[in-house]
Every structure is written in C-alpha cells, then in structure tokens.
Image (cartoon, rainbow, N blue to C red; front, side, top):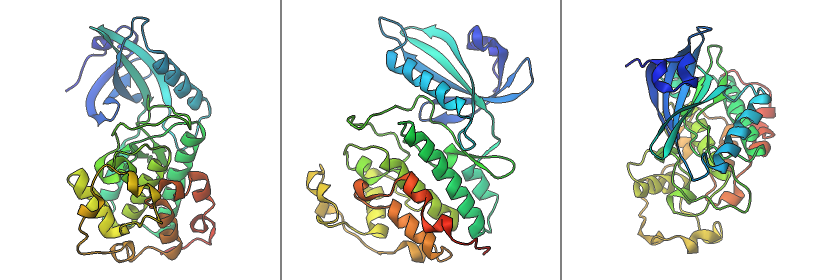
Length: 309
C-alpha cells in the first residue's frame, strides 16, 4: 500500500513510498519516488535504538562508512543516494537509507531463465558477485546475508550487492556470533554456534554459484539441524584432521546420520571442472581453509578461455 512521504519525517518528505518491496535482515524496503526529480529509489527503513547520548557511535561510524564506500562508485555495489532521519518513536529513531532502485534480484532473474545460463554468463555473474564481496571485505564489512534475493540484476545483466546497509563492521579481534544469514546459505560455523568472520560470505557465494548451474538452492533444510544434515549429505562429514574445531561444537556430532549421500557433480552435471574446483574451495567446512574473495578472483575458472556452452 502506498504511503505518503510526509509520514516518514521531515527530511524524508522529498520521497514518496509507492509500495513495500520486502523486508531484509536490517529493515523494511520500499520502492519510492523522489518528488523533485521523479527518480525511483529503494527506501530502506531502519529502526535505531537511541542511547542517552543520542544515536549510538557505532551507528554513526557505520553511516560514515556507507558514505565512504559510496564515494568509490563501485559497479557491483548498489549506490547509496541519501540518508535521512525520520521520526523518533519512544527510545528509537527511524532512519531511511535511500538506494538506487534496481527492478529485479537474482532469484527473479533465475526464474526468468528456466533453460539455464551459458557458462560464460555464469562466469561473468560469479565474477561480479565475488568482486563486490572482495570490495566489502577489503573495507572490513561482512555482508552476512548473501542470497539471490540480496543480489540485484540490472537491465543489462550486471550484478550489484544490496542489503548490507548498517551491517556490522568488524576487525580481526572481534567475534560475531549472532545468527543473521538466511538458512539455506548459512555457513556451518553459524549453524554450529561458533564465532565467524568473512568466510561466511564465501560459503554463501559458493552456494549461489552452484544455484546458477542447477537453478535451485543447493542446501534446502527446514531447520538448523536439517540444514546441517543436507550439507553433510552433499559435502560429507569432515574428520578431526580436516576440521580441528569439531571438538568445540556444542552439539553431538555423532548424532548426524548421513543418508542418500550425493555429490555436487551429480547435482550439477553441467558444471565445468574449473567451476567445480572453485566451488569446492568455497565450501570447506573449516572456514580457515576456505578461499578468500581475492584468491577466488584469480582462480582458473575466471582465467581460462571463455566457454560458450
């Protein structure tokens, strides 16, 4: 239902919400229109808890970081056009992040291509996804919710990462443990309640690349335990030698019974060997053994001669 821009606070009165697009990990997103220019935008409404001193310093730092990222004008990151303060409601204040509006996400794009994609298309999309992730990671941002719905596809087929606004910044000493990533793309360390960092994004990208070949999610669990079972059924159960952290997990590892074992090659027979190699580098159980975004961009999959099939 359309909303009046005036209900969004004084500074947001220049934007008129047209309809609700959806709800992401960090707030509700509306398709809106700039009343002055007529430009369509994506308006993300985020509720920020206030402290005694006003807006928390970490939020101000994250806003400053978003503005800084925007100055790079990265082709694979959705552009931030404006940040507005909305109304204060009790001890919270509404903030509105105004992004460029891209009409479709990767989930919609996959649905529109039921016959699948050529390897060259998958290679180009994968490269752009990883390039965007590398940019975030090099600026100390973990996306934490990479999935097809948060990857936007422009009218000419290019990928832009979205829904990372006010994602937590991090440093290498910080342990992030809150569960935020959508279940199907969630890395094992999150499912097992372990600390995590940038490798969780790499796991998600590996899942997405396989999905570009199969046109359906790789791991489709309905609960955290079922998700782990699905991962183990396809990736296999790591030994203590493969993953020393297995001794520290807070669940009974032996309780997972693996039935109907399959492998990724059988699920994605159209995947070339170099793509399979890249995906397996991304889907290590041990996050310390997973490739990085920067290393992934130098993988043979992106360096070999184009394949048109």
